[in-house]
Amino acid sequence: MLHIHQTPVLSDNYVYLLHEEESGACAAVDPAEAEPVLSVLREEGLTLTHILNTHHHSDHVGGNGRLKAETGCTIVGSRADASRIPGIDVEVGEGEEFRLGNAVARVFDVPGHTRGHIAYWFENDKALFCGDTLFVLGCGRLFEGTPRQMWASLTTLRDLPGDTRVYCAHEYTQANVRFALTVEPDNEALKAIAERVEVRRAKGLFTVPSLMADEMAANPFLRADQGELQRAVGMEGTDAVDVFAEIRHRKDVF
Image 1 (tube, rainbow, N blue to C red):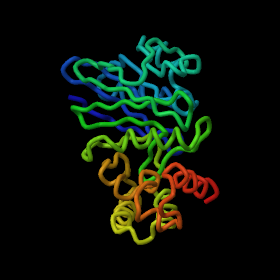
Image 2: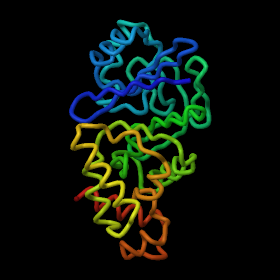
Image 3: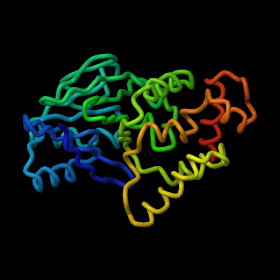
Image 4: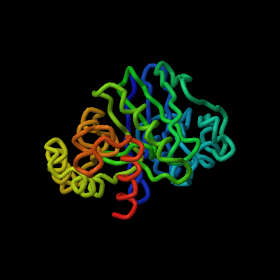
């Protein structure tokens, strides 16, 4: 069983420390900085055994070098992007499994934000670590991929069980709520989530993780093939990729 420590770093990033209690194995997911991770390790009496990177951006791999130097941990990352993951030791890709002690993650290739982006799904722990592919009520910008690639990646994640907890890498939720309400202002699920988000942020609380069921009901980027959303944006009957591309464009200029 995984115990998940969630640590805010930089301006809006999250680093997750995954502690598999039986074996003692411990992984940092997308460590943007080393010191906050080392601090939690000291406070909790944990030993870092792995780093799990979802993609190569500096705010996800910035702590790799120091953490590896100080702990000797093994760095795991995308085979398709191995040349851009600092210190990578283990390369993984679509459909493969990675074992963190007794916890097993399935790896998904989810290109779009970057060409080599991956996600880790710990099925037994109902936990998805998806980096910058899927956010609470949002998705990542398309820096290296196409709308078709990103839509395929998002639908792959959307197919996971509704009780999957979505651990994304940024606290972007309030801005995502404001945009989503311009797309589907009459979406009752979205309006209910928006209220909860405002309450949590007013108290200084995290809005991550979310549940996949909530994302399916309210995240416009997962709903490009749904009739209600297509009607809301004036694209009823249009191919979902084109609808997704239009929504992504609107968010880019929002």
